[in-house]
Length: 129
Image 1: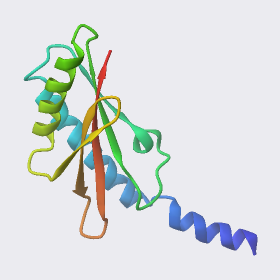
Image 2 (image 1 turned 135 degrees about the vertical axis):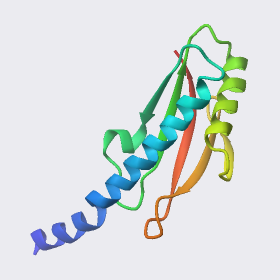
Image 3 (image 1 turned 135 degrees about the horizontal axis):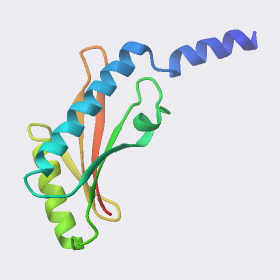
Image 4 (image 1 turned 90 degrees about the horizontal axis):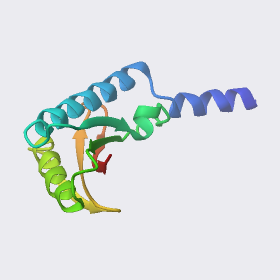
């Protein structure tokens, strides 16, 4: 009985290969968009995937993609926010974005993975090195 319950639960929460491929494709697409946008504003930077998708700990139907822009520590806090938001706005162009605040502002948008997979949040965070 317990094994049957566990099997049912695991089938609901563990992403199928097709869902995993769709999410990985979205993550890489937006990572590349961030990288391309960042080259216009920065000479030195790194774009890093983070969060549950990068760690492969996300649940089926609940993926979110966190993208971090690592900037040189020589960039002031003000520049970090200004440049970072320009990069994020350009990378998320065409999507409805929400500006959120934590330690510093970041943008969040939802991307439709496919007709059968619901919207997935993409968050762009700014980090100084």
